[in-house]
Image (tube, rainbow, N blue to C red; front, side):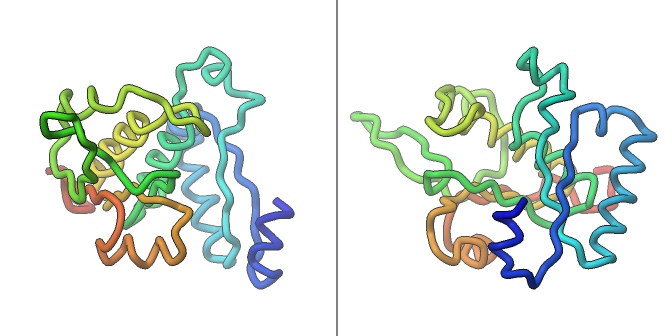
Length: 180
């Protein structure tokens, strides 16, 4: 948390929010989570969210997922317009051509099993890899959130993502506030 405080040069108050899957599966806890985040934002406090590994039994069993899934669930809880999944690659790559060259896919509008089958390897730095990011994108877009996967090492990556200039973009599958 000290690092986050330093990154904002003391101009932004930050607060750590440790969550477990139970915070999303219990109606009371979910409502409390939403109210807590709303209040922190009202007070101009930036919540830094992470999985509460020390109390998550599912984490120990390896079934909760990872921070990609957590971020997608959180995007739904706060009714986020965007979820940007930063990684160490430029986006989702699809193999094509006779030699299986990888090419960056700039937009994915439909999730298929073939799409998920193309990314069954995990990344070197995390647990979930690209497959986890696709699952998170599917979950968030189903809730009406725009999603992008982009390389977090690039300067100005977030403004570029919002202008669809970098990364892989996933449009929302429905509009916010609708059931369709």
